[in-house]
Image (cartoon, rainbow, N blue to C red; front, side):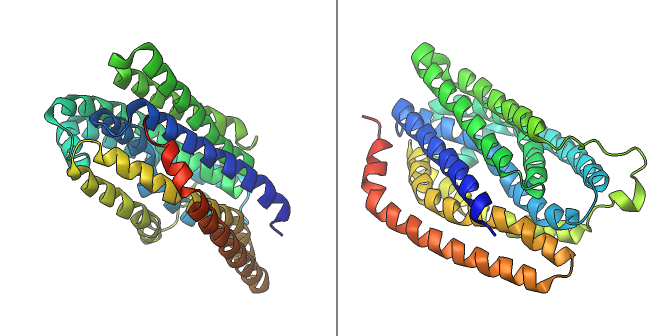
Length: 331
């Protein structure tokens, strides 16, 4: 059931994560474990973390089952309503982040020396500008998951990483003194490039019909959104909180923790995210159709595949961790 889609998705997900590792390596080589590295890590990771914590997982948990078995007009109508809410919420959060950028920098990167705090505050302005685009991208990626367009989903990550790697190289080679401005512009460009990619991959019938209103476009009840946000966001909050606490260890502590966490996260994401992305639309469709046998079979297949991939990933990490750790140290 998962063989054909799984092979393509695994290849794309592996390429995406390896490119992400290359991005972290380029970042480490450029900035090392310094105060500036802490600023760069905070600025480049905050928009996607906020989008993931607040929206990405919750959108998949709520909308993919809600869309199962529905027509294109209904799906497009609810997508438009959710998009409006996300853009408005993202704008409000962006304004708050800009206004509170100085205390936010101290909370999120407590080990920064006083001389780096202005750069951190400047970086948070760029993070705020990128936040609405990150939230909207999470919705459009959920639509592609519903459509089972895994090429579009994972290709979006490739686009972001390519733009950011190019920006890091340019910032270091052309204007190191203005690296925050260049990296901030690159971050915003990466978010917009991802939106362009997702828009290009969107179904041709994405525009909702004019008469799809009222009950047909109704969204799930607020408690469903709340529980989905908690179940998806809390696992992301724990490592982020640990990273923020670790940042109080001194200059460069945030960057060091981030590099170490990425090496641990890589095999987990490859094993679990791949299976969840492949299985969830099939499970939701089977449950919407009342086919308990098909949904149970999809769950069993997903658990078996996740276990096999997790064991293989753990073995690979044990064997390759020293080499991977060495490539993320600045000479």
